[in-house]
Length: 107
Length: 123
Image 1 (tube, each protein chain N blue to C red):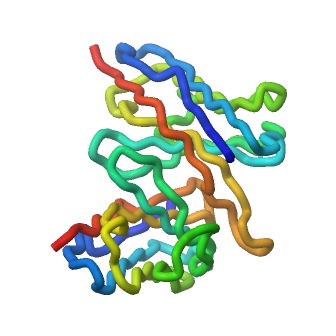
Image 2 (tube, rainbow over the protein chains, first blue to last red):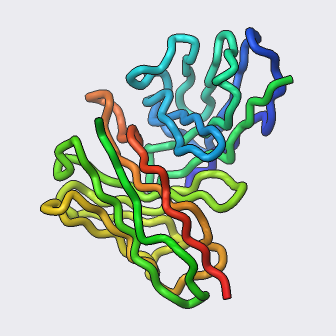
C-alpha cells in the first residue's frame, strides 16, 4: 500500500501568517492526491483534488502543488476558521490511503 | 442540497455484527461510487471500502477483508456496510462519502460526507 507521510505533525501559527503543509508518498501517485480539512466534531471537507485544483466553494487562499511523491498545501494567510486538521489522500492505487494529518493550531 | 445520513451504529461485543446504512438524497445516487471511511477516537482517517455505481466492483482495506461487506440498493438510494466478527480496533466513527471525478482527466475524491455513525466494540 502507498504510505503518505505528512509534516509537520503540528503547525503553530498566528492569523494572517502563511501555512505550508507537506505530504510525501512512498511511491509516485502521479497527481492523484487530494487534501481535506477537518474541524472537531465535523466530517472532513474536500479542499483540493488532483494535487492543485480547488474544490467548489473553497477560498483562493488555499492552493495545492506537487506531483509524483511530493505535495504541498499552502494557506496564504490564515483566518480563524482555518485552524483545523488537514489530511492528504491518494487516489492513484488501491487501497486508498490517507496521511496521518497535520494540525494547524493558533500560536 | 446533497445529503448523506448514516445510521445503525451502536455498542456491540467483540465477535458481533452490525450493519450500517447510509441514505442519500438530492443527487442521482445510481451515478456515483460510494465510500466508507472511518476514524477511531482521537485518530486520523482510514478509508474502509467503496463500491461502484452498479455494485459490480468493490474494494476494501486489508484489515476488514473477509469481515466487512459493502453493498448498495440504488432503488432505495442507500449504501450499506455489513460488519461481522467485529474487533475492538474497529471502534470508530464511520462516515459515508460520495466519490466523484471532479476533473475529466483526474481521479475520484470524496466531495460530500455524512455526519458519521459511531460504532463501539467492547465487552
